[in-house]
Image (cartoon, rainbow, N blue to C red; front, side, top):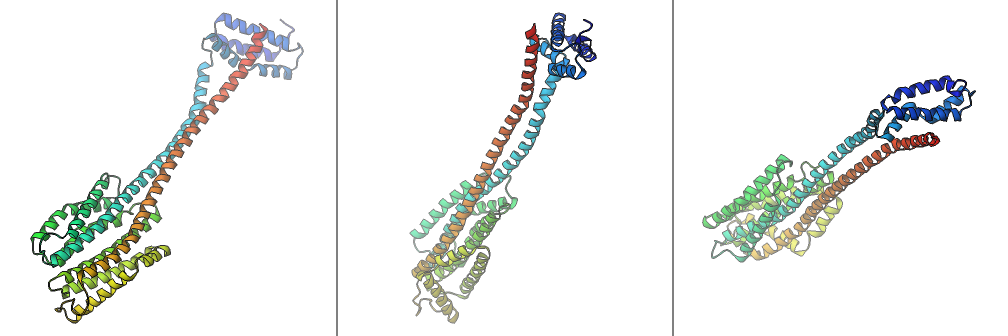
Length: 437
């Protein structure tokens, strides 16, 4: 075949390379492919074709290795480059997918940790709402217990005190139920405060029994309830915001802690004066007067703390809510009782003052109930904020997971499309060559 394009130096080199890469093919298949290639070149090129024309025609044919690999794939025998092509395809697909999976996995892991953290905050907020209710029920039970003891514990426990104990027990059960699961992963200080709270609740039955069976003065009843039960409850509530990264939640918890302090201070004042007016005869002795004065001073300090953490709207809500004729009457009654006890501690408080236990307890309870409206609003804000944070974190985790999955699918499809396009093009070339045969 001298004098043909097959003698061109580029064609001879191409055919030598083709013979080399077809060694893995069956002899008959290799011979047929070589004949098809030479025939195609003989038809496609003039004998005097220049180097540029020859190179262009050979480029359109594709590399000898690709042609041999296609022939091997068509016959079911592994071509000389099939293994290499497989590794190349695997690399093209795997590398970007691994990178996307690692980066996506890191973000998913971070979002999952955030969701777990805010899930704990949500749990504590729910628990704290129950704790606030328990605090209020304990205050009512304490104050009524002080009056019952001061009156001389005559006859059975009054219905009002029995109802208060029932309400306290129901609130305690709610707290104990919500406390389940607070342990590993939570702030150690918060966990310890919760343990102290739960321990104090187990002691409540013993306190009630001791109060009824022993000659406890009203002042001791107030102190035991305050120090042994209500104190640990308020301490836990103040610790709920510890560890959260959300500033808004932390500030609201601080505001709530101050409100609980104000509320308890008011309740102590109610208990001290209610016990004094319930005594026979009704007297506010110097120790009681000191306790009443100290509780009022502590109320002012806690009120300052509230104003320091609350915004203008919250302060205005407090001023508008804790007001009215009953609140004013309670304030005047307390001032009148202090003045009378200071002037003559041994004189009955009811003499020439118009004071009586029921009126004082009712008016002061209105003041406390008004304060509790503000407290309940703060507790509700904490719960709502914690729910929002948890919901947002969960939604972000879901979105990140979906985006990562879609990215992996997109990378897989994109990486696979390029080899497929190449295979289609190569198949087209092979069809042209084999069509000649």
